[in-house]
Length: 309
Ligand code: MG
Image 1 (tube, rainbow, N blue to C red):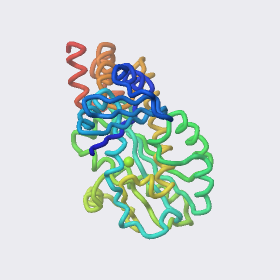
Image 2 (image 1 turned 30 degrees about the vertical axis):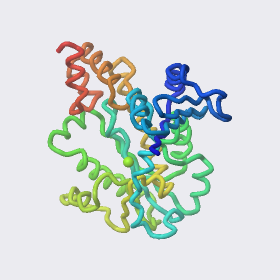
Image 3 (image 1 turned 45 degrees about the vertical axis):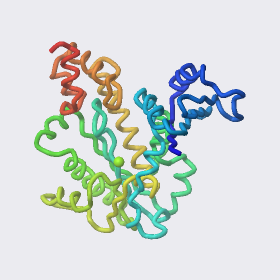
């Protein structure tokens, strides 16, 4: 039997409840918000926001809600993290981890951070709530990051939209990221001298070979004890910490861009971004948009249409 689990926001959950109210299973099963049966599919919603679709039409039924913004939890879990190359006990090593934030967001900068987590600090990091930032709210991220930057050795680089738009036509995003990761790793290594990490873990965005081919022309290349893993933050707290600080830095950058634009700019790259970009265009045209958005995204053309330019 096919089954799909979605996670829905409170408002979407509400919408589902209304949509299925004529198909409710009665009595309502214990510990659920509601259960419904529709066209051979059983839909069970939980207070946590998780909604389980079971039966022949599960995928199609779930798909309707996915289109409205519910996210599939299973899909993410299906993709196995490539951790096979990490040595045993890696989680407990002293590691510099690096990650970037903002490359998928139309508005705001691209931020890359490398952070060093010594073995002796791992318990403290856990205590402070360091974990996969995708499971944290922005508010939690800001609060944890503010703690982290007081004691954790880290290095951060921010590429503002204007600079990004200047570089982007001549360089792939992959190469740009590789150069930035290499830079923050170099700086982090310098920062902790004479200490040396047992390893470096880069949240993987390119194949190892490709990554190093991007760095060919660099004077200094960090390549000793370097490991790559997708979902790096789940393999070492150093990457999780780097990711949290990068997200914090990105959010501050987005706020800065909002000030420049004179209106609140959303993160991500959705229809909401198109509408905001159209407003920016009306205010200050391309020169203003160039200061706050990554222009090569498809959002730019959509915004031009909305603005009638
Ligand atoms: Mg990443």
